[in-house]
Length: 238
Image (tube, rainbow, N blue to C red; front, side):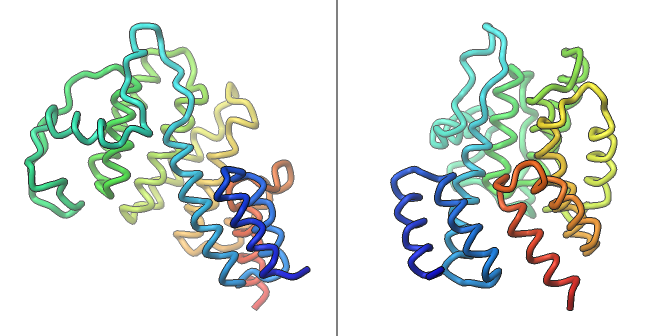
């Protein structure tokens, strides 16, 4: 296998929108050489695209909630935040900013998720976490089961906690949700992935590898699970 040629082929596919096919090529390259720089860079670009797609997940909303702001319309989300949250024209504050945010009004469920995602994209993880935790409580109260939308919210909560160096809390939350019997195995895949990320953040590499291997066993191309598993095997073998 000519790794450079494979990467060029993957880059072309990625540029024309064939993200999954490009990812499969990149992961094959990394399976041969986990530290091949071109493949690592392209995988990072693919992951960023996947993150955008996750944020633009299908909306499980009622008829009254269908006016939610689309996630991919970032400028509109920012404009809405500026108006509704009282954020000044100087721009959005960083995570450690002392700026005071107004309370977010009681929005339709999907709009509140959009607000949380906008915060997350701006690295305002504490604010994103606040909104996501509220959404999680609302889903628990308003719906009979967590469902795919709730699973995604929980996965984003764990992502925020990891960014805030609160990985132990993320693990506790994920463990409790994974144990819920009314969730389908395929709906839990993103939770397994986040558990792997949590264990990596805690430098528990053997448990992290087990989670990623669990995913790879039934979906070898789920995000970068196989790549992470290969890197962890390499680390543990040293």
